[in-house]
View (cartoon, rainbow, N blue to C red):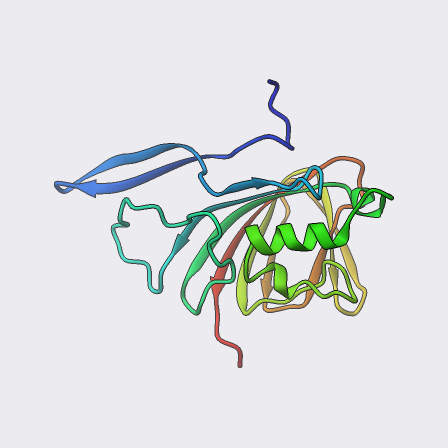
Length: 185
């Protein structure tokens, strides 16, 4: 099978310390990946998670098991890679918003519940986020309707802002997200 953005599973390499020396403890596909049946072209990969504060050196145990709660508590982190299909996928006659909602609630718990029913895709988390466009193009929309067009290599820093990701293009866009749990003022 040819690998596409819709089927790709990121490779994750994890290191640790044994007997005072750096070692590789795992090297393989991210175990917490989901290709959405209800949203063709969408994939979420929860690559890694840390507690608050991260203990160093890191343990070699699995930190991001399937169905891990996505929004991190203050001081915790989440590393995710998300592939967004073009928005036209959600606008087609076969799109079932209830099925998409149920699937997201199962595979990105805690985050899916924050998507606003009256403003699809809009959400806010108590996190500081570093968002990096790995491939494709995507638009970031803020709650006042302002948007900015982002391309491969662009970086967004968000601090608890209400927003939505819009893929107005004709192919998938892939992003890397580092979420750091914060405390609201």
